[in-house]
Length: 194
Figure 1 (cartoon, rainbow, N blue to C red):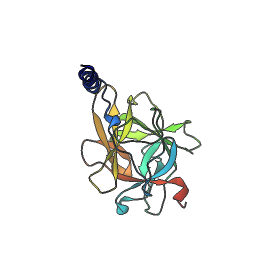
Figure 2: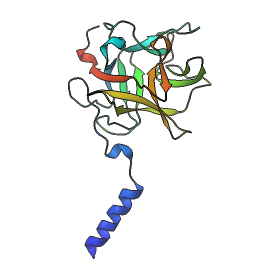
Figure 3: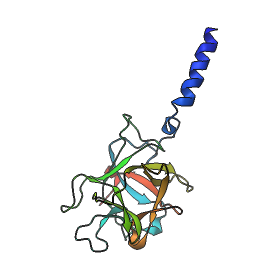
Figure 4: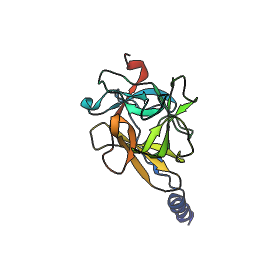
């Protein structure tokens, strides 16, 4: 009888307290080590010919580099990015909420230089580092990509209960797309030569 009660409690807790990241796999860097929560990395396209690492640039009529972009040159490492989750865990897993923040954003940009998504732009909803009245409320997450040992980034809007891929737009800007996500890899900042 006691075993049946314990099993019933297990089924009940499994059904009602399931969190997607509870069974998610770790996200690994290019050295095969799991990403540390709060660790610093450079993010590169998984396909080398797309460009260099992820950084910031001025786009449109911006007078400060607030747009998150893939650097034009494959030789550019981009900027150092802190990847963290509000969950109290040691390592980042797929499908959990994460924040991306440039550790040394542009001098003219707000501090901290956390990524946000701004809607209503000519290129669509774009990834920026400055909050605005048109910023969407939500979080990013990392999922495995179709490419071997690569990942894709998504933005999940709090009100919509859906997530969209982060892909490439005009001028290699990171924008939200329903299809064609940008496949990326994570490289420890200590292993990047600037």
